[in-house]
Length: 228
Image 1 (cartoon, rainbow, N blue to C red):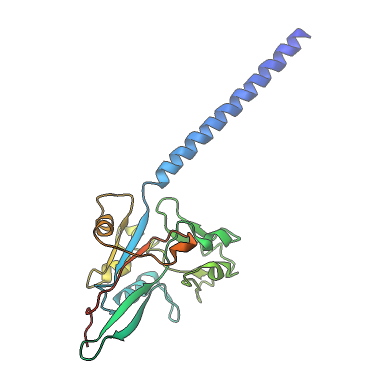
Image 2 (cartoon, rainbow, N blue to C red):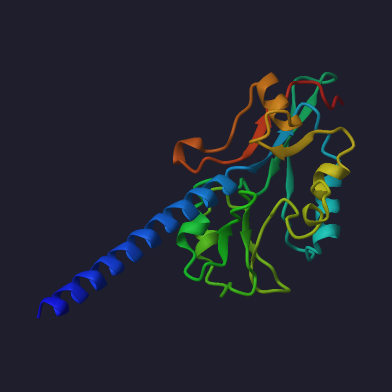
């Protein structure tokens, strides 16, 4: 009887030790994973004072990412003219995915097709998982998602994650901009150009009151960049 008790206690201790070890291992792995996730957080700045509305970014995005006609990952919105003739000017703003840190589109997706890439912080879409329910389109407060007429899946800007970025290049829109109005980089790198730009300029982000924590920043336009 005593031997049976001893065997039982030994077995119980072994199980507890194993469970504790597994818990510790899980905790360590989670900490290491969190550390890895924190190394890169990509973001973009659109300097409206430099944007001339040429739409080279739209063309480059469509070509590199094979975006079909009739839909667009990027739109340059023109407002104006402002002022009195002959001193009139236009403003140009960018409409595209904000790459929210707390993304409503990801939160509502029933299949996991919408996700935040752990390595880069980029909000992306697995087209093969998408069932076209359009929940993400309805949830996005920035109205930037659409159904791709070729893949029949939700689509949007992904900072060229699967094209240029995968090849070590800048996103197509950044590379194509003739006035360097777009700056892309890692917010976690204190020496990066984007961090220097953000430190040197006052910026705004869209609908921050919603708590989405968008990573598309804008330097507000100044009068006179395009004069009639």
